[in-house]
Image (cartoon, rainbow, N blue to C red; front, side, top):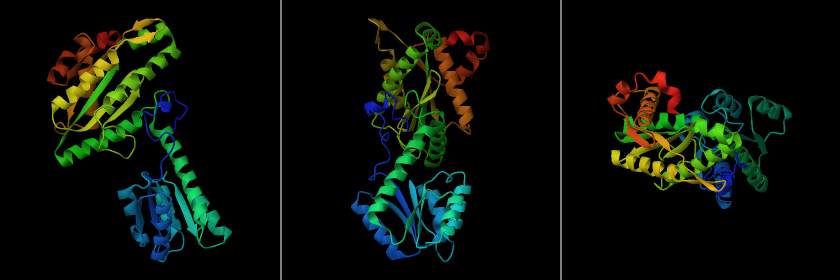
Length: 344
């Protein structure tokens, strides 16, 4: 994870220091119930509290897909489906292939270890397990996972969730809204004339300004007491850097349009607050597109296009405002190509 980012040190984004034991979900697959209970009891003693266990190796992959643990402790020698086959399935599955897998084996056969390494095992532990070694290896495995997750899902400059994480969250939230019969909202935030500002102050200074704006947007979302930190958390709001001078705010569950407009107004006010800059006050404004979802049968791509049109309309109407998506956004921005460069 990008723990060297200036924003990460402000503790705005929990998880920068790794996955804490009290939040990590550990899955244990072992055909011996006693061994499973002993492992869980020890891990509970050192602070772990979230577990998924099964003594049926045939259930492992289905449980992994449902539970999405942070780490898998996997026995090798099991009667129905052995650990090698499960490990191979994990590494072949697009949704599971990066999951850390710690192999538990009672065998001293170096061939077993080589085979597990070839299949992509993260680490090994000999059975009977040394509990002190287990605690250290698990801690190191989770720290490495947290680092890789942050590289994959967080923006290096702002330390906000990145485009990839946002799209994953939005796709899941859209599906949940359709299945649950509730509404969500999407805010597309584009910083007005930022390209000109960046050319004026220089790229390094422009990056500093983007970090300031990212912090302000994150705090606005945080004030709703609904901030998402995890790539697998789809129940909370998420502020993300979408690219360049564009940000997104995802509100996956709102009571009504007014809730979304309240957040949009808060972001508008926060971003527009003057920035103390080299003895002067620099005023930066955003244009914000706002859209409720789900909308009929629209896909993620269609909804993203619609909210971008709402942002374009906000710019056409004078910038420094938010605009709710409507059919007018389609008709009034039809000739956008001719003046698109001026909108930024």
